[in-house]
Image (cartoon, rainbow, N blue to C red; front, side):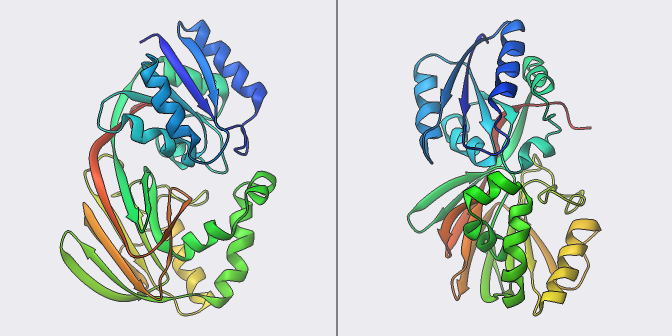
Length: 298
């Protein structure tokens, strides 16, 4: 493996050009031929990834957040060709879950070590939209926060921009009657969020949502959250972020590979922090569908 193409999102927060240059120097010193292709608008990463592979690249490297990674992923999903990560973005949760360091030289060293890891990846379909996700997808309150948080706010405040959006929205506490079908078994609930977790560390604070949630176990963890008040939402969020939440009020867990969600009224949907329309939606897990260059799981 000698030719790498870095697909860089220069508009991602923390996508520092000087740090990228240091990473490139380290990769070239390690023996890689490195080219850089910069995205110009949303969705451009997918086009650049296909062009890089058609041009003979044997390694794609994502420089940006989770959204940038997931634009590239469809080009290599199921092929066994690896993706390397140079973390940037508002909160690169995939890099954190895979224990990839944020420092440019250290991240480059993780790529040069050439340790491929197969992980599961999700594919979500909502009306008129298809997206992939590596960390989490879902619908409801969290997706509405992501829809309402502006790009400029994320660049200025990082993860804090989400909290600024979430607080006033939480005061209204939008809820819906949801029908969730997991591998053919349906449940009906009132919920504020239905989350599809492929990785355990989803929030930029706290611990994992559960040590049972891992990226290579062949299952999606479906988390249904309910709360009727702002105070109740805070309690549920605290249990989810800072403790074992599997048997706590307002939180239910289910597991499977194929999930269908409908809601009344309809709920906003997201995949790895990117807006993807509204319910109804279908999500499926592609077991071992993505190969990443990352340290072995501790």
